[in-house]
Length: 382
Image (cartoon, rainbow, N blue to C red):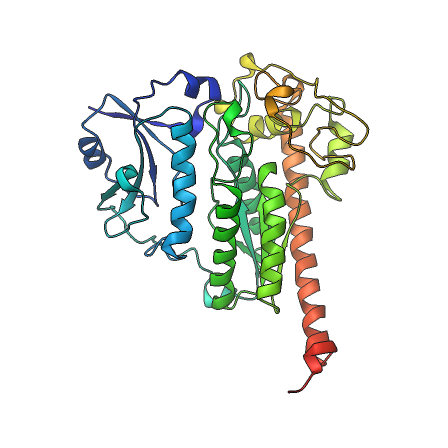
């Protein structure tokens, strides 16, 4: 009998220790028949389930072109193959084909179509559509691989709970871009261009549906520069939408003061898998945090214009190898984190996003008024 384990709950040393013959399966959507999947795999003793992709294929309720999603899937499969895993599969509903070759398993899903479409309903078109994007990557010895996904999912759900008349959220997407992935086992990577193409295609679908206020929210720093490109492309392509993004979370007008008021670590203690992420995970998912394994690493090669902390600083933008600065995958001081500070910082992150939602509405309202008054090219006649 096959035991399926949750890949996202592992830490990177646990992934590094997995036999490279372990089957790893990435489902599209929920409802995979695990008994049939086990039989298709040859009934191994153990197999891993990676975080499922919530939408993007025909039948998911929010579909993009097969080639666009296929590039995302191939990037993820290649990530695991780069780590030496030889049995990596994308599990799709029958009838779907993304040019994956031997990495593709098609099975009847128990629920082919989501019970609730991720697309906003007609009565929600005047709300800001939150698009939370996490990642599945190493977070040192003590945090699980899906830390970024857990955090941004909680922030998005909290924002909707606090402002249900102002915003809705798509299901949280669990994969992004990691340009440092080769240094530490377990980290996946969509690839920058595939990532941009996918999210631009999602915005195309939303804009076609009549959604004109969109907020791409990332829980993973590696996504952020690519999301800037997405909103630039989207704004050029769809002139009447207001699509926005920002640097991570807990980093703006509410988050930064909250961090400064409560942090125990000095600058450099919150870069990655450090005090802030550890504290939030202690608040949200304490059973997945292994505080006995924490190793603090704050010896980042810092200069006045280039250093690492949660709110990045300095004039220089660069991407040196992560293993120049960390032996464990962590940048920061996770050992000083507390669940109470995690609660405070999560509340600040949610409040910050709620304020951003209000500002997006204000931007859209004022811009539409100016357009409707015939300002600039909007008043030009042909």
